[in-house]
Image (cartoon, rainbow, N blue to C red; front, side, top):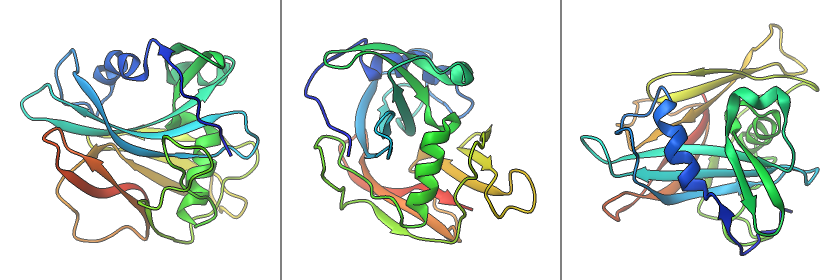
Length: 217
């Protein structure tokens, strides 16, 4: 289980995301986001090396407020294979310099997200150590877990990010698929995904809502 430290990060996560979000294909706000943290949960790395946070941020810029899902991984050293997915670096008050990555590209996150969708990983509270987040709901499915040594293929669209990967039983490369629902609060689709995780967040107006964060379409 990851330990949560009551400390500071300089620059902070929201400051780093305010620089990074306008470079994303699914971002619809202005060039200088005004962000607030609006929800999310954590996942544990069984090896205890990588921090995993599934964060929700609200942006008050643009023609209308928007809420985004931004999973991130935190590492204690640069991972060259993830240079293209770097959000930024930050000095953690306890752990020292940390590298923050877009988790969609990080195999550690993809594996734990796949396990979550099968009911084999437990979502954890964002702010408390060793505390499951009981507000996160799961409809489990038969998605397969990644094969050893896999590398995800990531495709961004206007509203979501698809992550393709190989599994031990995949007949074709990239046969398995995870979807991150990047823009929360969009109109619901008529059909529910075969496996999905839904959780709550707070809108910029202060209203509590919930919806699908992750799915296997």
